[in-house]
Length: 488
Image (cartoon, rainbow, N blue to C red; front, side):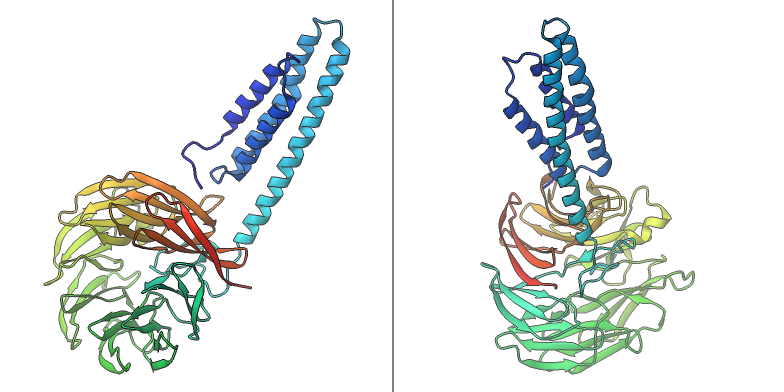
């Protein structure tokens, strides 16, 4: 876990100074206690996740220099005024030598442990993607692991392992069922039916016994769970042509298909709002096509309107019931559902052209639009006006996972891209931007936890094992964790 006041080389220096001063009087010395304090502080220094390699090296040099030089010099000065200078000096140097040896052993052990741990975290786990997160946010070619987003239905939590989909009790973490559907995206469950889409097919299974109800040749280009509204499943595919489609959720038969004219365009996952389907498209590097937004009748697939966004790039769409939101070329825009016209627009500050593609619209909740940027900033805008409510700054280059709002907080998962590449969950007060708590559960991973009734459920990998952590949302306290399955 990160702390607000990490143990630093300066505090090591202060501890050593205190140790030196008290060595001048043998009657005041308590060697075992002071040595133990120094050892504990060194252990804290090496286990604290905020300390980078440079800081560790500085601390090590500080400890050795002060113990080798200043302690030695201090005892020389003291011994010069006594009749037993030489014996005291030899005795002092012997103590310092023993202490140095002990510290050196500790440093070597902790250094080797850190190297082994970090090395084990750099590998890519089978079935996990390495460069693109489920929400489309790039990872700047980092070798990282992307964990699936769990889905809760009833008293079970569903997880895509890459080889199948498994369900676990949300109370104990014990396995309840395994659904043999390989190479698909994350699942969603409604009315007792599990739906999931792979690149070439969409599947429906009954959760009570795992029976396959139907399989459709319409797949999906996205790991996100399918959208099912009013017994209709919506998706999009690039299999033959760029197509948005609707299937009957009961049997998988196609209801309608809409073929996008520009076959070079990339599509966003569709969203359903007030009986209509909306999605965006953009053509990378195109000066003529740019980005567009489409509105289709959700029942028939007929085009209601199409509007140019007058920009080169567009992110996924979000909605709050009456307004559409997206990010285009560094602007956060609120769009009218009737025709796609801009209701308000907010320019993110200091956005370089190279950073535009890494700006992501993360969530719309509680009347606030949440946006993440490559410089590590989280922006909170009022959804009704686009006015900046607050900005929360993390480390530059941070990669963001899921944003989940519940109560008066927004819960954010992220991966720092510093040397340690720590995977964090933070809780931010939703109206003020004040951080409530922060916890680290893993490294080298982007996780997508979910929250329900005050409990956060997060899936992480550790030493070849997939583990489920449950955290208390009010303070981030880990309630329990359980190993779900092995990747080996």
